[in-house]
Image (cartoon, rainbow, N blue to C red; front, side, top):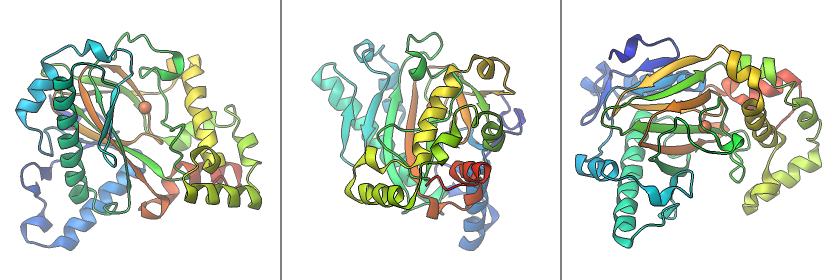
Length: 320
Ligand SMILES: [Fe+2]
């Protein structure tokens, strides 16, 4: 399959490979300024709603580890939506099987997270050292026909927002790899957050969130953030994005009739996307790995593309 031909919503990255890294002109001549400029240009595309796709793995993922993941049905995980891994505490959650398998899976997730972050440190160098490393996840179940409650469904278009990890204007970057040996992972996506906000933010109640951000409230939110009090630190932007996530999933007309694009990620493709700005739905596919990073506003290279800035322009008010 010719990945580059699919559509204008994604960019097939041809000048970064594993092993070796950058193969652009700048890297070949040792001109790191040229490589920095290329990386920055790609960050700008990502922030504007493009999906960057690598036809082959751009980081190390040993084949024996992939075979281990594909070798079983993971039925003991069915009580949970995914298996999650927290790199900062080296903790795995969502697995309740035997100890040997648990130890092995934990090791594979730890290695995956380390390798993918090493790759991102080089590939997305404008963000390196500024991001907050978030969770990784293993998604072993077929997405098509999953029995999940409406707000948890992956197959309905939505933008991401985290209930207990408010970003306070920062952005949610997610890197996915399709580990399936044969099947593509299929998405619908809408990359234009400006359009999405203009068309639906009003009906989702943005005005009521925009009116609740006086100086006292902002001071309390900042103070709570320094103390790590997640709920209290939520800005009106964070609260609205949680509402927007639910609103979009509840909106049958949006799900059926919005101008979405169908994307097919073949086996071993890796793709990255700001999922707070690109509406997405996983229609089908099985066995994916994912790593999330939170990019703070002061690390962004195109701040005006950030959803909070778009919503602030729309409402002429401060949301963070
Ligand atoms: Fe999502």
